[in-house]
Length: 298
Image (cartoon, rainbow, N blue to C red; front, side):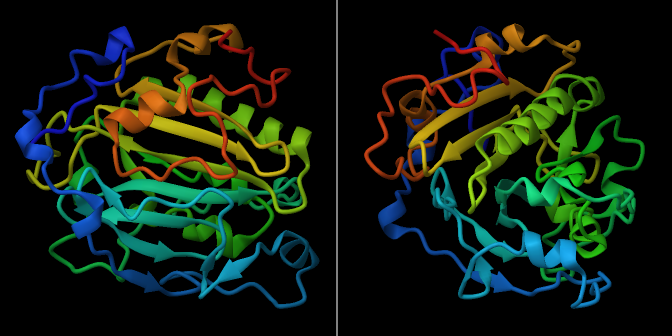
């Protein structure tokens, strides 16, 4: 079953794939989800409790999971998502697609301080069933990068947080040119927006995958058709949202990202069970958050 991006009016995404409406019959009213909470995530080394940077960056939690100002989806187009709780990000994982469909962060300016290097310890997430999770071998020779959803560069403040970001439940098959070019640029802009807004609770960042263009070599791990990133500011009650196709794209200037920006209503028309905006945010309008970081669509 391929779930397409044809509801999004971005020309480069229209041909992603095609899904009959009957394949999207399951609704959120009948969707169930299960939450897997392990902190720290498996295979990480706990930082000393006295680490001042960690204490300054400690986010608010609720029932052992990161408390997000914009709610994390519990299903993807009717497919229930497992909620994987990590110290500094939460993932919504699809067993059907063997792919994380969304991650959520509360990115504070404090978190962007630190000198922790990339650990490069990519590994399976043992919280998921051994037959329903991606492996290192899935990516070997596939031609796709192990593209981070919650970026490693967001976690330089903490060795534990950095290591958690290399769980395979936080990566997706990503075109190398996209990963190392425009997507890296959008990640950098996200950190700049978090610094600019400097909200005590942090900038809410939801990052995820859309659609299906096939499988990796074992015919299990879904290759997404596109990636999205949503910024949300609770204090300003404002947002920005981009959808980039999972294809070869050159590096872009800030203004060039405009053609990939979408309003919430259009995004939710494709992903109908994506939660609505909090605080009566106007979904019909393009967001206007951090215009100095990313030029506005309009």
